Image 1: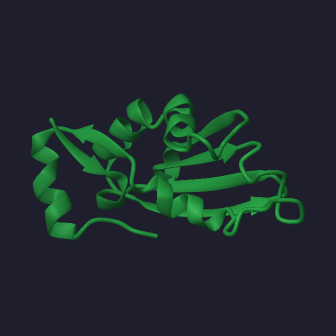
Image 2: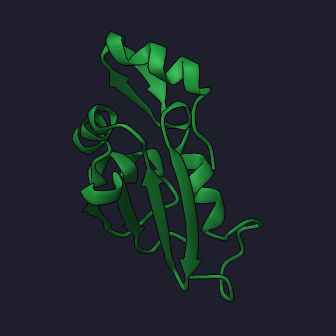
Length: 120
């Protein structure tokens, strides 16, 4: 097993509404999607965003498009109108999530290297 950042195997889109951040995480391979399902848990996402996400994280699986939808509550210090954070918009959460590391079997690494990774 090798550790890889999600940015090497997936794409992300994110946004916000009020005090909630919504992140979409997309992959192109069934085996990689299974690894993401196993390791990108709500608990792990909340831990990854420690100090930012104060509420619950809910995960919705979209296997037909090999994607996850992650909804992070109480993530923007009250929301855009009441927060003192300099960059409180949810769009940066997608890029931040792509820095999370997961483990992948060695046989998947050549495919990742040939594709050049993911991104936002």
